[in-house]
Each structure stands twice: as C-alpha cells, then as structure tokens.
Image (tube, rainbow, N blue to C red; front, side, top):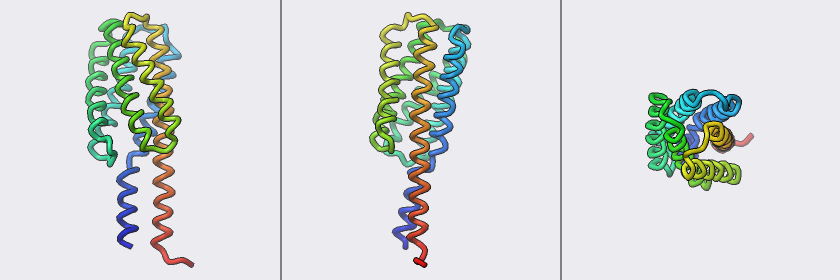
Length: 195
C-alpha cells in the first residue's frame, strides 16, 4: 500500500506541470498566428509581441525548473533566465533595429529548440517534439547566420517557429496529462479491493 502511495506521489511530482505546457503551447500558437497575420506591421509590434511571449515562456520555464521534478531542471532554468532577459529587452527596447531583434529571436529559438530536443527523449510523442525542436533550431540558426534579413522574413520565420513550438508544447502537455490521468486511475484501482 505504501508503495502505491509513493508511486502516486512520484507520478504527481513528475506530471504536475501539464497545464503549464499546454498554456505555453497555446500562447506560442497564438503569438505565431498574430505575427504571421500582420507581417507588414512595424518591427516594434513584432518585437513587443515576441517579447511578451518570450517573457511568459521564461517565467513558466523558471517555475518548472524550481517546482517540477524534471531531470533537466538546470537547462530549464538557463533557458528560463535567457528567455526572461530577452523578453524584457524586446519589450523595453523594441526599436533596437532588425539586426538586434533578429539576433535575440534567433538565439532564443536555438536555446528553446535544444532544450526541447533533449527533453523530447523523456516524453511521450517523441517524434513530434523532436520535429518541432529541430524546426526551432533550424529557424534560429537561419536567423543568426543572416541577421540582416528583412522584418517580413523575420516575422515569417518567427511566426512559424512560434507555431511549431506551441504545437510541440501542446502535445507534451496533453501527453503529461494523459500519463497523469491513467497513472492515477491505475494507482486508485490498485489501492481498492477488487469487487
């Protein structure tokens, strides 16, 4: 009985953040759609939208690193700090120029892609998360290697990156939720006498 209680507690600790992953994914998809829907808007709008998303994502990554039971807590914390700093810089100085915005966007995409790629091997639906991570990394490398791109191209790459990141996080969150739900039902059934 105590083994089942311990297993239930471990399962809760490992899957507690399913809703954070879903929220992050939803924000990512919405941010991507907003950026793609208005690529001709000013660079300042793109920078602020991206900055808000990156800031929220960084806060959620930091919460996950502090509270969650992930084996990648250190990497989550590093990406969280990078995301918070990048988000604040983009919100505070949105007119820093296409090159500065492109470099911040590119670095963030690569960092988020690497962390998600490593985390994909510990999760359900690995293939989808690996694919989304690789898209982020490729988009980030493309932006960093050519930071003089126009803001319409930057908006296209960033928007698609947001959408793929959001889809990957949604899949991860739903997988965590399913594992939590099925695991809790299993431990509850095992704790009760059979009828």
